[in-house]
Amino acid sequence: MWPRMNPALTPITSRGGRDLPTGYSLLTNSLLNKGTGFRDAERDGLGVRGLVPPRIFPIEQQSKRAMGNLRRKGKDIDKYIFLSGLQNRNETLYYRLLLDYLEELMPIVYTPTVGQACLEYGAIFRRPRGLWISIKDRGRIAGILRNWPRQDVRLIVVTDGERILGLGDLGALGMGIPIGKLSLYTACAGLHPYYCLPITLDVGTGNKDLLEDDLYIGLDQPRVRGGEYEAFIEEFVQAVQETYPRCLLQWEDFGNHNAFQLLGKYRERICSFNDDIQGTASVALAGLIAASRKTGTELRDQKLLFLGAGEAATGIGELFVAALKEEGIPEDEARARCWFVDSKGLVVASRTDLQDHKKPFAHEGKPVNTLLEAIEAVRPTALIGASGVGGAFNQEIVEAMTALNPEPVVFALSNPTSKSECTAQQAYAWSRGKAIFASGSPFQPVEYDGRTLVPGQGNNVYIFPGVGLGVLSCSGSLVTDAMFLAAARTLASMVTDEELASGRVFPSFQGIREVSLQIALAVARIAYADGLARAPEPADLEADIRSRMFEPVYQDYV
Ligand code: NAI
Image (cartoon, rainbow, N blue to C red; front, side, top):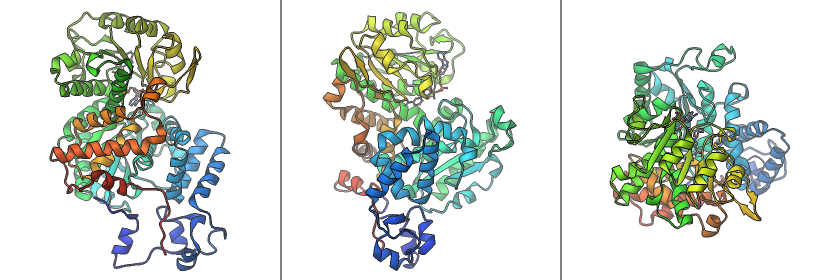
């Protein structure tokens, strides 16, 4: 378990009671700086007087002022740069701001603006935040991990930059993603920023434009694959275990093949998970459970047809099967309720071109080429898009789903907005207001036939921060599917009846910290029950987890 106080203070006080950094050094320590928030006694006692303007401001007012400054920026990318600057100066205020204006700032800190930030990462890079470890560092990775200034790391988000959002291979520019994800862990679940470390593994890039750009910040070589890549990852994993033995490792935005391979190889060995596969699965399953609640049916009554059969789609399929198995349905029956269409058509047993992760879902059936034919053949209750093909759910498709179902479930999960399989407006208009719609990217509420319909955003941020908090709060040794199942059920149970009636299948973002806490609790309970917790179980688990959540308020130093 981690201490309740600001851990940035722990190494200082444990070094034989040495004082806080003072004066200018204190102002440049982002975890301790308060800017104009230093009180009189601190200004005198810590040598800050004169280095900040005379008037003292509480954090609430600092947050208001910062938001005013941010709103004056015209472009979202400038807002992103402003926020990064604030994060580097004063992390407490940065998180105060995120929490005060979460819905407005989430699309800046994460998708879609973070995608633009990655594309421009070489140009907007100001101060180090996170580690780049390149394939040329083989043999010395543990040493590089020790260069990180904070000694007790509990949470690493790592990418190799090969599949950044829907933008493809951005190599070393992918760093924006682990940084953004970790910000969301702190904002949404109260993981203290001290414990978080973003890492980008640079094994080269397959992106020709980057290789031809002489200002590209990553390794100037084609992406390494095969045995050399695997040995590099293995050294990285061992170095992490040796340096930070209590750490949770989140694999993020790896290319399709490596993502499945790394998850399969390490999920039983170290405390790790893949958010693109398991986090997406959990949030989508929560949406399906909530949709079933709305239609008065059971999850087992759903028949799913996916467009796309990659990390996101088959991850959802696998977790759906696990959920039905938990309800006592035999695995083959559960699998028979999941069908997939990939770029070559319906995934059926007679196809010889299927990758391993698709094979468990290749049922007996006539090969068909188009999505419309697949809908007619499968007769699904729910259509789930995770294909990255913008506009793939056209009027004909949504109408076909509406002809089959009184309230068709239509989830268009592909990001960014331009890749969404359809918009909220289209889903509601083409289904005559009947669709239960959710998307990966945010859409505004839609007025239809005198009603306001509110689309749900199936954002993984509902899931991964709570799962991480739960695993870390009990010092979990592994992250299991049972935990993602519990997270999905918890999330679905937190959608109110009013929210369901308005069309939402996910709760409002305003309550995200409570959602994360409840998910953490469910996850930690599973860890204790399954013998996966390394910390002793506290008498009041909920109170204990709550008390360790980071709150962006200033601690008194003097
Ligand atoms: P992936 O590359 O692993 O899978 C894409 C799949 O789509 C492949 O099976 C491919 O065959 C299929 N596909 C491509 N073109 C197609 C076409 N014309 N017709 C039918 N299928 C086609 O990618 P991944 O990670 O599964 O992501 C897919 C999409 O889901 C992305 O846009 C991503 O942004 C989104 N996503 C959304 C999340 C969320 O909303 N919470 C989380 C993770 C991913």
